Structures are given as C-alpha cells and as structure tokens.
Length: 114
Image (cartoon, rainbow, N blue to C red; front, top):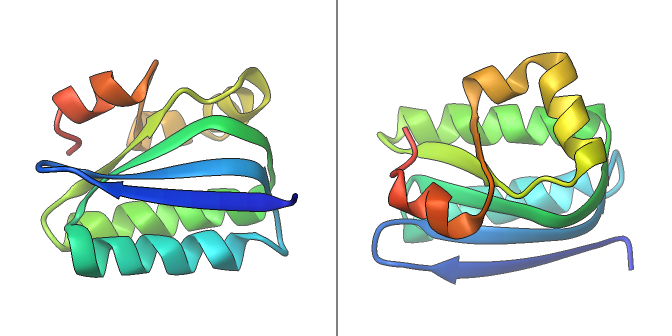
C-alpha cells in the first residue's frame, strides 16, 4: 500500500483521510481527490493526516495547491493529526503558518478552516 484516500462529506466540511506515503508518484492521486472534493462537496476541506507516514516536497506542493484552490473558492484547508515526521516538515517549511494544523479532525471541523 502506497497511498489510500477516503472522503467524507459533512455539513460544514469535507474530510479527506490520507494514509500511506505522499510522494512524487502518489501526489497526483491526492491532487485529483482534493480537486474533486472541492468541486463536488465544497471548499472547506480538512485533511486527516493521522495515517500519513511520509511526505516529500511533492506532497507539500499538493497541500499548497489545495489551500490556493479552496481559498479562491471562499473556503479553506486545515490539517489534522499529522504524525511527528510530517509535522516536522510542516514546521520546517513554515507551511504550518499558512495552513492551520489541529490535533484532531473534530477540532479542525469545529474551527471552520479559513
């Protein structure tokens, strides 16, 4: 298993769960899923990263693109439960200052991402 995605549409957000490794080869699958989620379920997106074990610069690019697309549609993106290696990448690159990171999906949904 390289990457598994699951999507759940809620009343005030769509949650995309990301499991496995997000790299050059799997990033296009997440990119497509995010575009489809925003187009069909709305621009308020929560990415559940609790089962994401690895992310490289291709994954960061997808997160930035998701943020740009969601905000251009009047919504936003939040990240939930990143594991320590992924959280470290978010901190090191400063992406956690652009896209809010929450300890869990429920908190991210309650905060209504901006």
